[in-house]
Length: 123
Image 1: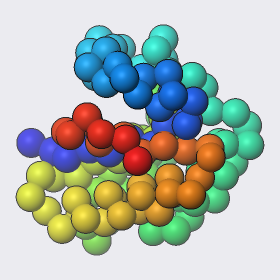
Image 2 (image 1 turned 90 degrees about the vertical axis):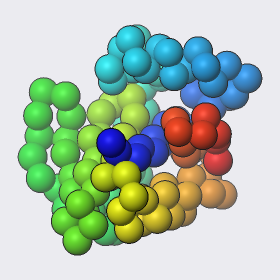
Image 3 (image 1 turned 90 degrees about the horizontal axis):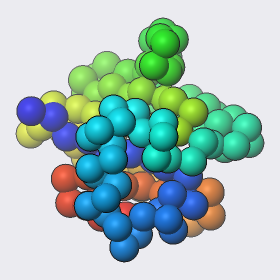
């Protein structure tokens, strides 16, 4: 089992705020949400790439997106044009780390929103 947190464009939060169940169902059907989520703008992609330099190590590019890791905690990230998916083993110290990192990325940002699929909550 794993724990996940997503960083999405703030406009996705606006679009799905009252429809969290719809968002979760769509993400289940569309593994990476390509047909449901809005793409990041070039400026948003650049800002997230810069933000990933703080605590994350780039691993490799795949056809699904760019992969990153936080090796000290066993956390992983998949960065696609639609979302930044963060995950780690459930019950590990990495839960705090990825949740905190995502909160710091989203808080006070008009650009990014943090979505916790376990709770169905936005930040």
